[in-house]
Image (cartoon, rainbow, N blue to C red; front, side):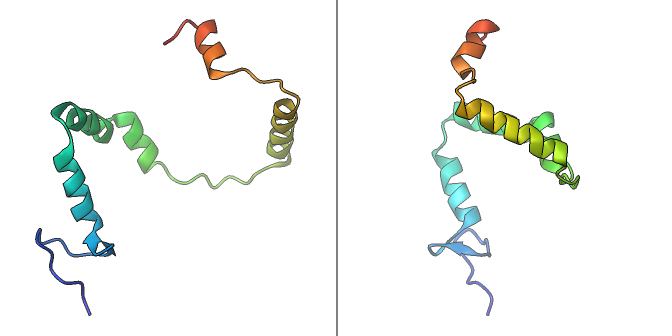
Length: 94
Protein backbone atom coordinates (compact mmCIF):
# COMPACT_ATOMS: atom_id res chain seq x y z
CA UNK A 1 0.00 0.00 0.00
CA UNK A 2 1.49 3.36 -1.02
CA UNK A 3 1.49 6.43 1.22
CA UNK A 4 -1.56 8.68 1.07
CA UNK A 5 -1.26 11.91 -0.90
CA UNK A 6 -0.49 14.90 1.29
CA UNK A 7 -1.78 18.47 1.07
CA UNK A 8 1.44 19.48 -0.71
CA UNK A 9 1.26 16.54 -3.11
CA UNK A 10 4.41 15.09 -1.56
CA UNK A 11 4.45 11.35 -1.01
CA UNK A 12 6.96 9.52 1.11
CA UNK A 13 7.88 8.22 4.51
CA UNK A 14 6.28 10.08 7.36
CA UNK A 15 7.56 11.45 10.63
CA UNK A 16 4.62 11.47 13.01
CA UNK A 17 2.18 11.49 10.09
CA UNK A 18 4.03 14.26 8.26
CA UNK A 19 6.59 13.66 5.51
CA UNK A 20 10.13 14.92 5.85
CA UNK A 21 9.55 17.26 2.90
CA UNK A 22 6.45 18.69 4.55
CA UNK A 23 8.37 19.31 7.78
CA UNK A 24 11.15 20.94 5.79
CA UNK A 25 8.71 23.16 3.86
CA UNK A 26 7.11 24.22 7.13
CA UNK A 27 10.45 25.17 8.64
CA UNK A 28 11.54 27.03 5.51
CA UNK A 29 8.36 29.07 5.76
CA UNK A 30 9.33 30.11 9.28
CA UNK A 31 12.78 31.43 8.30
CA UNK A 32 13.51 35.13 8.18
CA UNK A 33 14.89 36.46 4.91
CA UNK A 34 18.38 36.63 6.46
CA UNK A 35 18.13 33.02 7.67
CA UNK A 36 16.94 31.91 4.23
CA UNK A 37 19.89 33.65 2.58
CA UNK A 38 22.33 32.04 5.03
CA UNK A 39 20.77 28.63 4.39
CA UNK A 40 21.09 29.08 0.62
CA UNK A 41 24.76 29.97 1.06
CA UNK A 42 25.24 26.65 2.86
CA UNK A 43 23.47 24.72 0.08
CA UNK A 44 25.45 26.55 -2.61
CA UNK A 45 28.87 26.51 -0.90
CA UNK A 46 31.28 24.73 -3.28
CA UNK A 47 33.51 23.45 -0.47
CA UNK A 48 30.58 21.91 1.39
CA UNK A 49 29.30 20.48 -1.90
CA UNK A 50 32.71 18.85 -2.46
CA UNK A 51 32.55 17.30 1.02
CA UNK A 52 28.99 16.05 0.45
CA UNK A 53 29.96 14.48 -2.87
CA UNK A 54 33.34 13.10 -1.85
CA UNK A 55 33.67 9.33 -1.90
CA UNK A 56 33.71 7.54 1.42
CA UNK A 57 37.18 6.99 2.84
CA UNK A 58 37.94 3.34 2.25
CA UNK A 59 41.56 3.31 3.39
CA UNK A 60 42.28 0.83 6.18
CA UNK A 61 42.98 2.07 9.70
CA UNK A 62 46.70 1.34 10.12
CA UNK A 63 48.90 0.61 13.12
CA UNK A 64 50.33 4.12 12.72
CA UNK A 65 46.79 5.52 12.90
CA UNK A 66 46.13 3.50 16.06
CA UNK A 67 49.39 4.77 17.59
CA UNK A 68 48.47 8.38 16.77
CA UNK A 69 45.05 8.00 18.38
CA UNK A 70 46.59 6.40 21.47
CA UNK A 71 49.09 9.26 21.72
CA UNK A 72 46.30 11.84 21.42
CA UNK A 73 44.25 10.02 24.06
CA UNK A 74 47.25 9.99 26.42
CA UNK A 75 47.86 13.71 25.85
CA UNK A 76 44.21 14.47 26.57
CA UNK A 77 44.21 12.31 29.72
CA UNK A 78 47.35 14.08 30.95
CA UNK A 79 45.83 17.51 30.34
CA UNK A 80 48.18 18.37 27.47
CA UNK A 81 45.51 20.22 25.52
CA UNK A 82 44.97 23.69 24.09
CA UNK A 83 41.50 25.21 24.26
CA UNK A 84 39.70 26.70 21.31
CA UNK A 85 39.86 30.09 23.05
CA UNK A 86 43.65 29.79 23.46
CA UNK A 87 44.07 29.01 19.74
CA UNK A 88 41.91 32.01 18.80
CA UNK A 89 44.02 34.28 21.03
CA UNK A 90 47.30 32.87 19.72
CA UNK A 91 46.31 33.42 16.09
CA UNK A 92 44.39 36.65 16.79
CA UNK A 93 41.12 35.41 15.33
CA UNK A 94 37.49 36.03 16.34
